[in-house]
Image 1: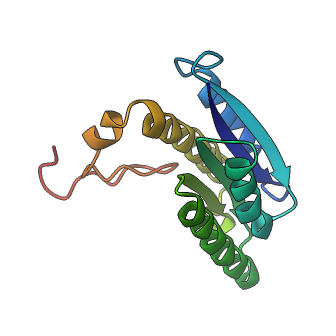
Image 2 (image 1 turned 180 degrees about the horizontal axis):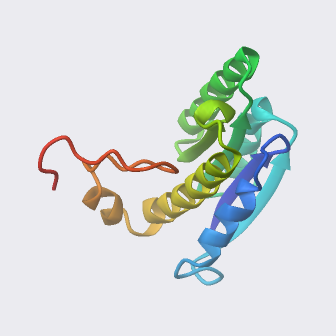
Length: 160
C-alpha cells in the first residue's frame, strides 16, 4: 500500500492540511491502495527536511508540502528559500513533492483568500493522487490554463 505524505506549517491561517486530507480521503482507493501520513512543522523553512524524512524514512510515494507566506518582504524571501529546499528534496529523493504555497497578498479579501487556500490544497491533493494513479488526467488538462486555487486562465488558443 502506498503512503501519501502531507506536511503543513503552524502559520497558515486556514487549515489547508485538513482540506488536502479531506480531498484524498474522497479518492478511490483510500485505505486500500493508499494511506495518509500527516505532520505539522513550525514554519516554511522546516518543510524541506520533513518532506525528505517522509520519503526516506517513512517511505512516502509522494508528499504535499503546504504553507502560507505572510505579506512582508521577509516572508516572501522565506517562502522562496523553502521552495528551494523542497525542490532539493525532490531531486535528492527522485520523488514528487507538490508545493502548495499561498501568499497573503494574493487577495485583500479574507473570504477570497480563505477560498484560495482551500481550493489550492484540494486541487494539489487531487494532483498528487493523479500523479500516482491516473496521470492521464493531468495530460488531458495540459495547455488549458488551469490554476490551483484561483480562477482558471483558460487556453490562449484552441486548447486540446
